[in-house]
Image (cartoon, rainbow, N blue to C red; front, side):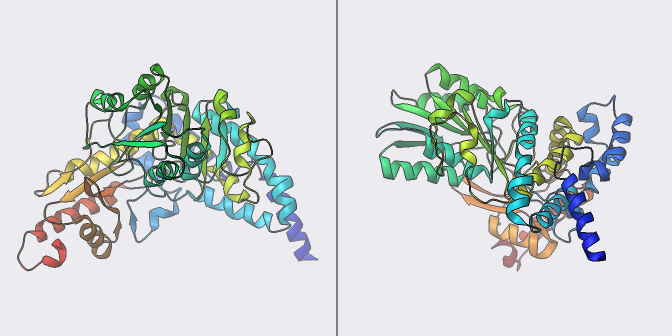
Length: 444
């Protein structure tokens, strides 16, 4: 009898929590009052000033279980850990789903997608009817890349520093259909937007139909002048696909402000949503012209939901996005951007003073935020990354790709200054040891 009562109590409570935006959200239960009190104390402070307030950020850090990991994660640009409230939401909704999957998933949790769509649209600054919820930036952008009607000979302009999955998608269309995929190449860092815009402008011909541009270059964190590229392209009747995998949930912007036509992102990066969550935005008057990547009964519909016909999906992950939005919004987009940039500059400014250490990313606010590339003379990136992990328990990303050879470093709001001091110490030790005789195991 007691077990039945416990089960009924659990289901009742779980049903009440199926809306992450209700007064009974997990974030409200765990953080709301404390954070409101903090925000009252900071009400007159600018985002730049709050960026250096360690008392405030220590409270945010406590919201993440990753803060206690024995391995320091400085690869948040790949996948960011979720705060505890998001983890608990996914677990709770998963338990609920497994009471009776087809009932709780389709009749209960599926009803939460519309409120979620509205909250994502609010953050994105757009119409909810332009937002589709999916699994990552690759799925979102491949939907557009494969969904646009292009003919043999039509040209698409991208660059060699775009994300591989997107480049491969365009190449597949080139191999299969005979479109022409042209790629620019940039030597980053670049601190002249006109140089970038002019490179795209100069590549345009009468056959150019699409420009594909990455908002934040994943390899080294260069912020691209997307709005200027879009305006230039539109003056010539060319549409723009924007890869926002590393910008949404980090930079303080609204998607329509970029003036692109299509935008895809992963929500499991700087928004800290559950792993395997993403979002697609398509300008409303262009939805009907894009074929869905997966089947739909009305593929030429102007309903954005045609891109969500995935069959059975992870409803717990979708609903966990809601708690990630609660957490993000409680911090504030501008505060988050300034804090993460502050953290990047904190370690990078110290590191560039170490003999033999080179940065591969601008430290100017207009050109970078979270991500920076770093290298040490005489040490290949794989060896540097391996040494950081094996000897110092610091996880980064080693990059040897085209004209980029560095280790990518990307902190997040849960990263502490002590963590970054430890990272800089490790760089200094490795740099010193690399020039000493008999230490070829470090230099490679």
